[in-house]
Image (tube, rainbow, N blue to C red; front, side):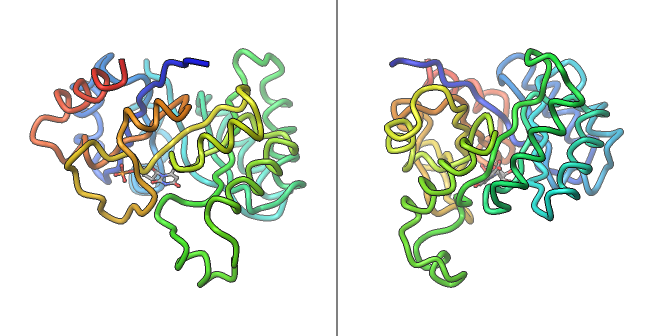
Length: 235
Ligand SMILES: O=C(O)c1cc(=O)[nH]c(=O)n1[C@@H]1O[C@H](COP(=O)(O)O)[C@@H](O)[C@H]1O
């Protein structure tokens, strides 16, 4: 099935002026903006509201705690910010994911306005060595499939994964789950701390609904032109 892959810009900065400038420069070039730990913990929730006004928001705070704490935290966050997409860690387990979904449904009875719950599988900065160090002996691929199935069965709308697992996830879970893919590096750009990477085009061909791109855009000489070049690669 051919799908249109959309671009999320990761606005990773501690500086609200910088964040606003990027968002203004991007205009409609990007399809959504992601605000995560760095911006939210530096600038606060009101600043998230301010910077994301008028844009689709991916609120990426990757909650991971006991089910009750995650459900309450997610409820408070989403009530005030109404993101389009939001994250928890799949490794928090079935009950945590289920309670997170319930909390979103309570806050947003209409499926049209309910933030989509994404479960992060295996971080794109992890490789086989990194997994072995935390006691996971299987491959990143097997771990993503295991956590991905668990998360979707437990109520997640979609997953965050690397582009390397997209084809297998589609084979196992079908077209419905929303697959969001960071670890994207246009040809020739630095990997930084990312390990499981692909280009925008490769991720799109493999079945990504959304790609997440941060530093290759924000650290470029001309961030808006770089975002546009990625959109051109996707179209
Ligand atoms: O949940 C995420 O968005 C995420 C999951 C993951 O496995 N890997 C990952 O890089 N991310 C986020 O995606 C963004 C990637 O940024 P760059 O590496 O600068 O493109 C960062 O904001 C990360 O927090």
